[in-house]
Image (cartoon, rainbow, N blue to C red):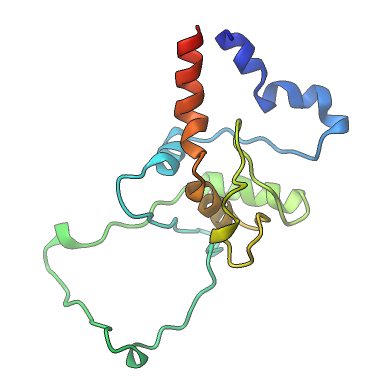
Length: 161
């Protein structure tokens, strides 16, 4: 398959023609920095900072007196030891929040070639239904197939051209 043929299969190319018989869809181009965040598996997952305070997981009141293993780390003056701020994508989060509202308050997120169909396990409700940007991101980073969208599709396309 040639690259131009493969590109015609992307949703942004066929959806306008089939809009009347497809589910309501809004398409967002993802910034490269966000794609890199999704693909980064070099360490533990660092959850995003939500500018709208819509965290992916419910807040839990933490009572350290109830935990025997709880240890308070001493503060360090060394700036290199200070934890870095969690990543944030405020412009994308606002656009996605507007889309979620426009689509009725809940969405099923999808990338060009895959969807987070195997990520219900990470949801507090066991559902693929997302009501915030943070939930969408959590589903996307938890799926096995996210790297295929970027790397696999590109590699296969290069092999076939």
